[in-house]
Amino acid sequence: MSTSSYVPPEVWKNDKQPGGKFGAINRPESGARFEQALPAGSHPFQLYSLGTPNGVKVSVMLEELLQLGIEGARYDAHLVNIMKGEQFGSGFVEVNPNSKIPALVDQSGPEPINIFESGAMLLYLAEKFNRFIPSDPAGRASCLSWLFWQMGSAPILGGGFGHFFAYAPEKMEYPINRFAMEAKRQLDVLDKQLAKHTYIAGEEYTIADIAIWPWYGVLAQGGIYEGSARFLDTASYKHLNRWAELVAQREAVKKGRTVLKM
Image (tube, rainbow, N blue to C red; front, top):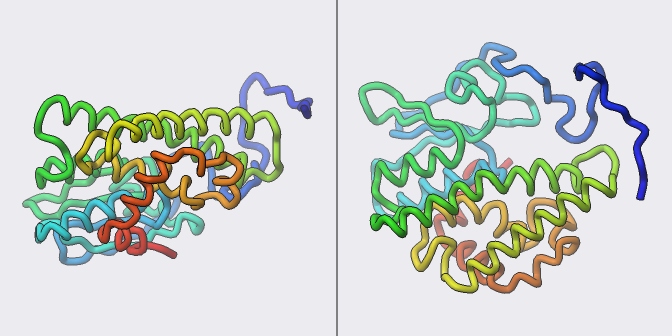
């Protein structure tokens, strides 16, 4: 196993370009970097996003609501090119001070409501329209537990495994092994849950499925990071793959994935 001679300084400073796919746009400071107003359409919801695993969650949710005939869920979709740093424009930062996609504005009321973080958006929409979230206490608790499981787990898959496997400027054995082990543990958690239930939180399709599928369902089907499905042997998780295909065939999922695809 390779070793590194790097010794962390007493106080870290951003004095070296980190490299990698996203290295050029990352900085240790938050906030707007330039003035840019956000476009806005006439529909109740304004979605600012991109077709990434996090980005498609809300477009899928809105499309699911529209499939049910809920006119109040109509939305305008605005592409935010994160590789060009458009998430650092002043208008976007006003909606999401964390400068991450997606961002959502509900302009159906007397005053616009800004929502950021994809899990918060899914919960907001589920509660507003009373759809895709169980009404009984046990079902709701299960749904929210799995929703927040995704919020806490996906950074390990994306920022951990995905970064070092696909985006880092060089391949390093230790971080790839470390995060591959955790990614496989997460896949096993889902596979065992789905061995007992049709959907993530039970027999009902919920916002937990909408949150988890763009990461783990797509990963299982060979998406997200080239070569990762083979590397992680995702085909061996048969219950996860059964669920992944079931969700992938939903019309709202098919449409929601393509709304803001570059």
